[in-house]
Length: 246
Image (cartoon, rainbow, N blue to C red; front, side, top):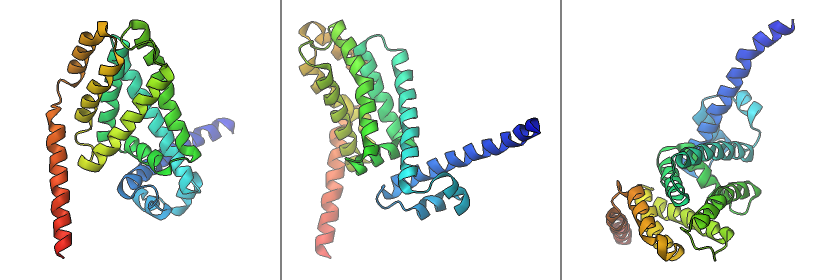
């Protein structure tokens, strides 16, 4: 009996896992399309294609779905960080590779983008705290490695430098999202890295760090940032003019 129950329960459990993953993906897609505030449970369920019973079996509220999306976002971000740092030759190299890897995820992975959108929209809610704290916890030990290597000045607090990096990346991806739908995110981060590291690196390591930045962002043309920003501003002004003439 027990063996039969386990045998019967195996496929059922697998289907339950697949349904939950399907719901998380549907929720992420809905959050990206409508934003968290306008993503109703009915919209999420419609995107998922599952029945009401199957939906509410897994998630009773929108907040519960959001928490699941944030959990999957955290897992994918952690995997990206681990993969990026595995081949890093130094602390600075790891920071740069993590930046590029996460920026690419925001451009290509709807669950990761949804996680960032939810975190940004819900602000001070307890659901958002975990994401920011996770990133601070990931970056802080890498900063300490950089300081031991002499790449980042030791008179700065690792906590403060970590906060600067997380804050800068958060603001950069928001601005890039608003102006170019994150098309120029990697290039824009490269521009900001150059300016930030200029003030953080030691004189002895400045040339080496600059070469690492060139290597990390060499495939991306940072001149596109100004061009794409100008295009966005031009489009905005044209739309404003058309609206004024109506």
